Image 1 (cartoon, rainbow, N blue to C red):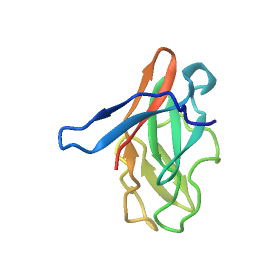
Image 2 (tube, rainbow, N blue to C red):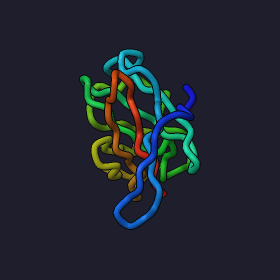
Image 3 (cartoon, rainbow, N blue to C red):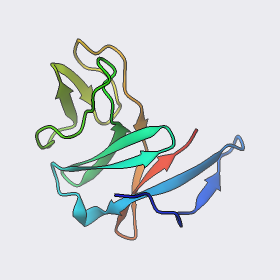
Length: 119
């Protein structure tokens, strides 16, 4: 899915520009499923966990491979090659990954899932 060009931005308290990037209709990401969106820094995976949306960088800090695309996610963590990551915080939970992945704020506005893109 493509980010929306017409999504409004807002200024952060420190003056940096931040914006909400449209992922797609919330109804199109079923519980246990995900969607990806491209931000300036790379791809972000947005997961629906029982109706709650979480977004993290779609790259494993252990080997640089993608985190999305595996089996359906119905819990708040996911794994790759034995490494587990928390979707709520981005924290690495088990080796061989030791570094967290970046997480992003999400919201549902007018039935659409959006991800906060900030520098």
